[in-house]
Length: 449
Ligand code: HAM
Image (tube, rainbow, N blue to C red):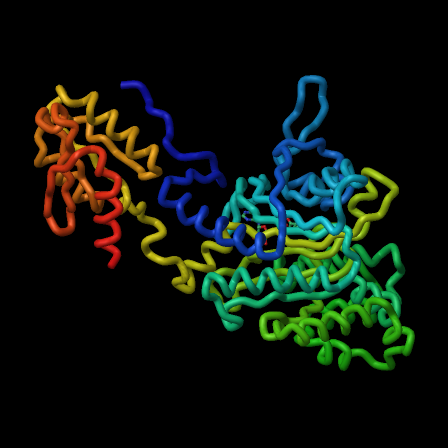
């Protein structure tokens, strides 16, 4: 006997069976409805892009270690998108003259990262992105936070179950420059170190810091940024903070944002977290990651922030953007943890499917014609192709949970009639085809009342 091929998908890839997809689509459609309420429009970009647009602005690690690279014949390298934001920047720049700003866009791409598959992380995954471009003010970041809170609330989650951990890169810049005296060119290294904080064990992390910096004030400063639990806590750990720091854009912007969160009453969902800086290079302002507050799901559900210079890859014109990416898989794990997915979502509902069963194959033409008539009225319809043994056909309909079965026989065909059976009440009646649709509505209405 020949060796059979594996039925498993590639490592880190997922097969979505209809019941899985029903849950995923329910999540995505619910979020699309929220996006509609904020007037976001959907767009799509290719899954393959030139590698350069990611190499320049995403992160070395993401492009060099975690990407699927496709080589074209003449050596040109393409990348299977590990994230969407650089493609969004490319599309916006291409039409920057005609697009009415601010642009509010949503997209649900499939992304690819060559990561170690683990709970909440796959090599192929769906990510919901929502971004606003061309709006400088903090109100745009606030809108994104409001959307995140609305999304969780819509699914029934509370502030005890999730938090948006936020920070501002400009604030970290001010801390680095005006408190820790970090040379400007070394600030990106501080971001990198902070971003690795939760991805390394303590001794590994300490070694990484000591290899990167020798100055004791800076080393201690990194630990303070990592450990502080609030803004007050962080600032109390430093002595003699200058007026220049309190006058800096970074400090003032952070304070204003914290005030805005209070003004719109979403502070309970948000926690200032100085170690959240994000691993992608393009962020410049407010940054955030959303986590489950419990122990079950340890990886981020959402990640995002403001990027001021991403479009500079394609044009000299500056357009700023802010937005998030949400892993659909992580979000569904979160919902499962808190029992926020209704049971019935995973089961297909056949209640309004009309089931046609026939006494013999001689009436198959009549049965098929009827099916088309019913579908033309927008009712889903299944024809049982066994065309014999009515009892078996009815029991199949019962198993599916169908409400209405149409029974077709030679007499019905001859007289333009149909026998309609209500599977809940077991009542059946033979009627003229011309009154069939009204009858279907009557039975549905009756079952719902
Ligand atoms: P990110 O933090 O790299 O940000 O990804 C955002 C979210 O995508 C994560 O929080 C996680 O839920 C999901 N995700 C990431 N990697 C995987 C994976 N391997 N498997 C499953 N889910 C994953 C970005 O991608 C930014 N481009 C988001 C953004 C939009 N920033 C501004 N606008």
